[in-house]
Length: 586
Image (cartoon, rainbow, N blue to C red; front, side, top):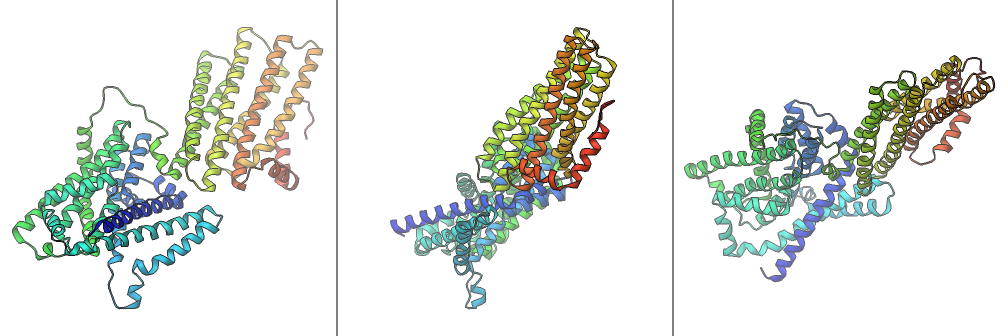
């Protein structure tokens, strides 16, 4: 092996790692909503958590990425530590899929059909379709499919390049002696752990081992300990990810490490005893690509079979290793680690935005109650909810901007834009709630009194505003299409109510039934309540934009008003429901 072979080996390794990275990222994007749905169905059952970890890792081809996600979920309070343990165990088995795909390179047969299964036979075809999808299709999903095919073709080409570069080593005695040294199980484990820790991917390090095995110099006695060490090395990614996280997230990373260390210690001991006592002939034979894939899967399945029934003990162990602090920790609702999987991060943004919607609705409800029956408790509640809403907007807005800067598909980008607009509207609703509260405080402090007719009118308006807020919240949180379509006609009714109430107020002033001071407060209340309904309409409009995949809400709204009989029916129903005393309806 000369300098040119070494450079070829280095180039093949770079292509292999690059292809694996590109394929994994594209698979995550392509999985999209399915990944969000799968992760959203986690339960406390061991089997469900295990299968979820196995399935997700099989799809995105990275146990490190799955474990980092799990650390983020635990840090955000989405997963308990006991749930995380089961998912992590499933991820360790799911990551073995890559080795099976790479083992196809070892197919050797004269049969034409069997040869078609070799990557060198079908990879060029995949690359051709991949480049067509990637360069000529406008759909982001088709482009992602193209990236998956190109990534797979690149990693397989890198694999073949590495195998070809090291083929000359089959005659080099020093290379054979190197792997004879790794037949010492402890040295083999150390070598596998160090290599995997450096490249932070057990799938990639197993692929490198398979490429070296193509020389025929790697025995099963050397390969098996290296595979065991690779499982320990892959824990580095999760451990680094847990830096700065809360105690439970650190424990989740320690679960990954403890699982692999304990599993390796147990099965390495068994392996050593078998080797010393029975000296199987198999351990001295050259490892094949297929044999390494079998060993990799078998080891991970055996570790899971050993430790899955004892997950409770594993949880107690990591709790001892990472003890509770003296003071309680805050749970981060939005974890930066989730940005590694944009589809999951977006779903988390949706959930946190729903919490913000509830916060704004609570502030508005308390503020409206304070108008008719003021109390210091209501005032404190409104201001507390408004401050909370401000914090939500700051954190969510920053997070969504970071998310939007990532490589996400058009649908995710549109949803992120809708959320950015919606949180602005929810924050303004909480601001108007404070304004309403200040009007209530002025009424209370100055002992202002409205006439009976004014009180009745204000009751009608506040009821309508509370309903439109409820509709907007339901539309946003639950995606209720009926609620979305009901917001606009009710908002029109509220606009008319405001004008009617202004006219009534002027009439009362002219007849001496209302004071100037009370009139100023009245006008402020009308303005703030009407603006709340406007923001509710904006929220429903954003959802309508998203469903139509464009930003032409007003055009859609005009079309609905012109053509949809249901819109007119709802308009008449709300006009009748919220008609002022002695006023004409629509």
